[in-house]
Amino acid sequence: MERVDLSFLVEGLTVLLNGREMVRVTKLDLSPGDIAWIDAPSGAGKSTLLKGLARLIDTKGSLSLGKVYAESIPAHEWRRRVTLLPFPPVPLGETIEADLLSPYKLAVRKKFPPPSKEMMLSYIESCGLGTYGLSRATDRLSQGELSRLAIVRTLLSKPQVLLLDEPTANIDEASRELLEGLISSFAEDGGVVIATGHSAPWGSVNRRFEITGGELRGAT
Image (cartoon, rainbow, N blue to C red):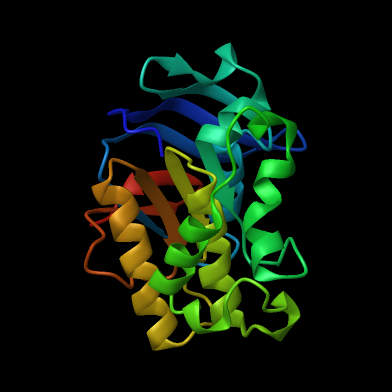
């Protein structure tokens, strides 16, 4: 990850879906190291909000990362910096190695060197997949293992803001703890994390929000 202290600021934002106003954000100001959790029931707009923050769907309002405003750079470059990991996670390669290298096949990352085998092995070791090595077929991984692999793949692509949609859904306690370790390390290195779900599962979460009536608010 680019080790530059960058705050993530959202002001007066409305997320649109097919021209319809879905979620409103008056102000969301996150600093490097913050791990924010958005708690809301299914259908409240969690996924829609994350897609808006990643510029995957239309928005009105202001989005900025450090001194860079979202509208000042191409959407694909914004998503390189502000990266969404959707739910459910799906493999992007037939093997663990192919999956981890898949982001570097995109044009937006052609100028960046892909991770070395040593780095990939270190990362999969840290998420409990080290015994499989890089040649393990991804269709032989469990849901929890795929979730961990997807987060490692995303971290290796070096985002500055990590958007996680339902990161702990349908996974066991061991996978949940390993995910927390990966996410905490990312935040400690200066990253910003925004995750959604039905209840905050980690002690490392330091900012809590909820979506009520289509509006993001600080949790009470």
